[in-house]
Length: 276
Image 1 (spheres, rainbow, N blue to C red):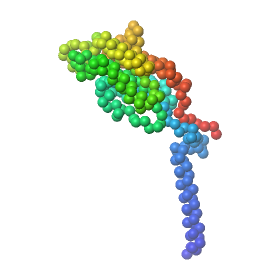
Image 2 (cartoon, rainbow, N blue to C red):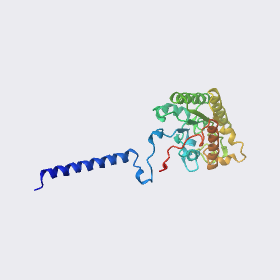
Image 3 (cartoon, rainbow, N blue to C red):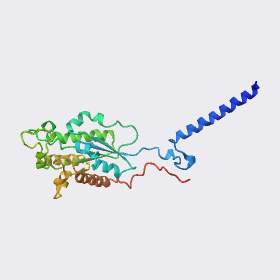
Image 4 (cartoon, helix red, strand yellow):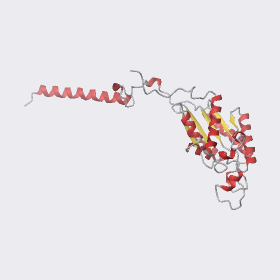
């Protein structure tokens, strides 16, 4: 028979070893499973990395939704700011300003104390400018209402995040011939559902909304048509090809830079490696 005092010593040793194992396990979890002892992924100084990456939201219709496809301007924006900030997609195919205002409370998160987004692009008008007597008439928003809606969207976003930079982007031009060849729905009448000069009037209202609210803007409708081959920017007269996406990307990057939102001005999120 094993003496009783030996049993007590064995139990005490087992408890001590177990406690040390649990403490070590807890310690490794506390640094996100980093293995600082090996020097491979040294434990980061969490006190210096408590803030999450800043954000930019891209908000708009299908031209924004498709910006996260291959060759899209949203993807390019996310790549450009890799490890600097997060680009958050809020693109809604078929949407106009009237539609999004009805659900805008569910589109953006409530302020949570983590800081205002750095910027939000507001890129609507391509659907609002659909002709009221065309096959896309259900997308049409009267031009005076369109401008009012843009200002209402701005007011909502500024109430949520007062310091956020709001950038208005006008609708792009329309290649009418390509729209007739590539209707988005059956078009037995053979008539246009959008016209370039009408879309230009909506672009002007977008610029006026920006001016009235002292907000920056990008006149995409005018800028694209300065290129002799501007029709190559569209695959169906409305939605963007990779070259059209590059124009939008370049304009957005340039506008952000005017407000010192650049790769150089934003610190890298975390450093995974620290000197031994």
